[in-house]
Image (cartoon, one colour):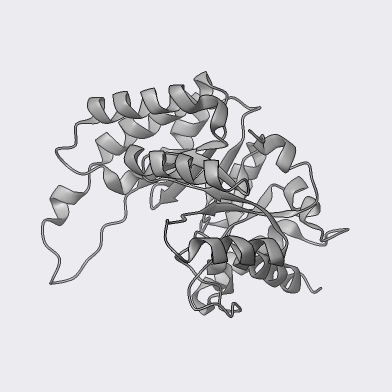
Length: 269
């Protein structure tokens, strides 16, 4: 299995976070990514069942690098945390040599509002999310695997847990980063990576653009490796978050090129 550390030392584009699905359109999606110059697609799972599908997909397509995780939104009140971690742990142990990362994992404290939403208080289980996050991070340390981390409205808790468990030399990617400049700097100061996707192209993301510009400043080069050396990676989070400069109907891994091009333009190139 290709190691993330070696990928980040090479000068090519890869999609560091996507969610593929099986179907008749998948071969076309793969071919379009290849034609666009995308070297690898990091395919994430949201639970252990999805993880088995991701692993099978990667066996079929060499461009796909599999990761298995438990999305925090999978943890609601009443979730059997012990059973989930037990099954997930066995899957990681069995496939540790075939995994690129553990992901998608993390914390999500966002609570939707609206008169048509019901049982909101029952849908958010912070304690359970923390237990699963800590358990998944423990597995990543045990098997020396990088992690792709989802954080929404939970930076303080997520940063604290990451610092307490992950070693300094282990790769952490903060997927779909939308935090403040201070949070960005804190992450990079810990040698973590910032995942940038189509959100950066949205009108509503002015603060994110300004934070990224402030952090990157005047770069001596704008090759993919120049960004990796600054702890910036590019992603699509396909099929969600289509960049505004994309021409595809939905979002696909090929659009990681559009995200990269947009950021280069943001820096005046």
